[in-house]
Structure formats: structure tokens, C-alpha cells
Amino acid sequence: MSDHHTYKKIEIVGSSHISIDEAINNGLAECAKSIRNLDWFEVVETRGHIENGKVGHYQVTLKVGFRISSS
Image (spheres, rainbow, N blue to C red):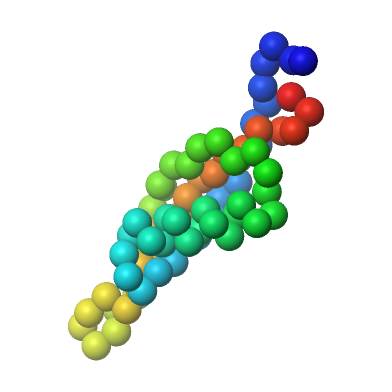
């Protein structure tokens, strides 16, 4: 067993018509379908789409860190 861990960091964008929290959770849920050992996330940008003067949907850019499986 290694006495250290090595991580990889990727950037994703989650979206939701409901809320920023749901946009984060949607992005992480999709990420978890194909990437193992997810450990942390950082919100780096929040934006949205406007429809008829109201929020149409939220977009959240996330940096997601995951541990390299052999470390």
C-alpha cells in the first residue's frame, strides 16, 4: 500500500432548470458514472441562461478531483 495518493483534476459543467445545488449534483452524478475514486470538487464559475427575463437554467463549472487508482 502506498503512503501517498496522486490525484487527477478535470473540469466539468453541470446544469439544472431548478437550482445551483441541483446543477452541482447533476454534474457530479454524471461524472461518477464513468470516473472512479471521486474525492472532491470546487465550484469555479456559476452562470445561467435567461429565458423571457427569468432564469431558464443554471450552469456550474466544477473542478473535480479523483484519486489515481494505483496510488
